[in-house]
Image 1 (cartoon, rainbow, N blue to C red):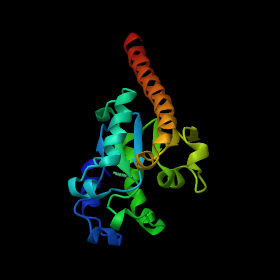
Image 2 (cartoon, protein in one colour; image 1 turned 180 degrees about the vertical axis):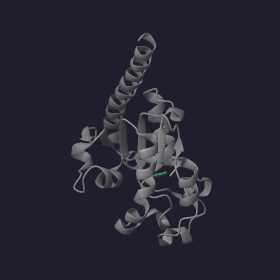
Image 3 (cartoon, helix red, strand yellow; image 1 turned 90 degrees about the vertical axis):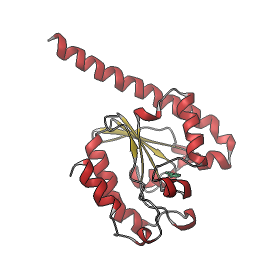
Amino acid sequence: MNWDELIRECEGCTKCDLHKTRTNCVFGIGNRQTNIMFVGEAPGENEDLTGIPFVGAAGKLFDKFLCAVDIPRDEIYIANILKCRPPKNRDPLPSEQDMCIDYLRNQVRLIQPKMIVCLGRIAAMRLIKPDFKITAEHGKIFQRGQFEICAVYHPSALLRDPRKREDMLIDMKMIKAKFDEYKSESRDFKSGEINE
Ligand code: URA
């Protein structure tokens, strides 16, 4: 399935009840050639209204962290586990995640990132391991097949508890170092090709 087919299918999706209350499907946005994908849990009110992930208060705080470590938002891809907003922003149900996860799988397959960064516990429990503990394991890198995966605090958690922001900055600096490393690897590969 290509990008256009995947987006069309997602926008018309009726696999779970969340389609009945959505304004927009929040498919994902960003650079499809990126090495790093960020994955949150589910759209909130502003995301549902605009169709764009992480544009509300949590998204604005996330933007500040991207800016602080000099990762341009248009050089990464941002998506969520769920593409439709759960009522009153409740946690995504396991059944909703099961219905929706193939959209994310296909996004990962098309992008082939070198690293996936889970934004928060819900994404980490789904993508890293069911018993993931965000307080103990944020910033830790796991190898999963061809890519590395880690989790950082969800920006909403940083709004509720600003003391966590120090740890977030440390984790984001590590992710920036990876971002630069991947970039230089692909540059070396390209210049190698030219020299041979
Ligand atoms: N929280 C999320 O997990 N995702 C969004 O897109 C917005 C808020």
